[in-house]
Image (tube, rainbow, N blue to C red; front, top):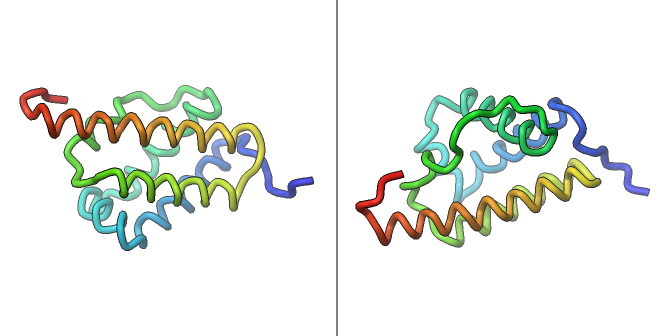
Length: 130
């Protein structure tokens, strides 16, 4: 039997988000991009991510916003999204198991795919504004 806990509470979400973004901040590929964009606003970003994942995974509707616009003009490509997803999945797998952990990885994969497609679209159609 798997001894890893399931994602059941907002405290679990906070643990996941904090662990993931600690990895991101120190990552050679992703760290510079995130740190440049977020700068000293990490607490605000983390709080937003808690609410986002709480809404997505726990169906406790605390997030209200549009997740894509802040990402529309980031200097990223497929390699960044693949690495982001690799770090996210690794973090989930190290901390949690079960249905919500699987759902978190599935949703992250769908978001990475959608964000990359939208970023490419806006690069190729610069007159369209997010």
